[in-house]
Length: 43
Image (cartoon, rainbow, N blue to C red; front, side, top):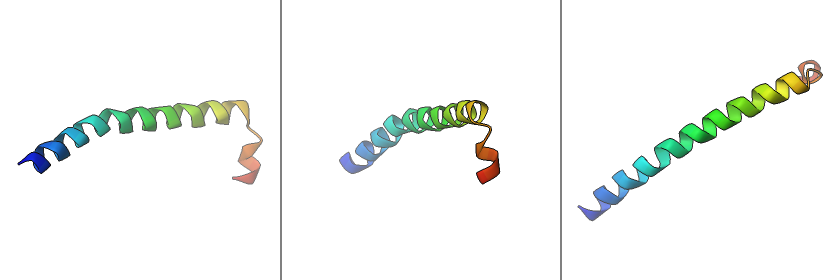
């Protein structure tokens, strides 16, 4: 019972963290893509 509750709280706490990480990485990638268009050659 305690393990299940702890796992649920862990998932609940990590959910917004993953959302922030995904959103941050996406915005960072877009900003880098705008600032450095020269990366298109290497990609």
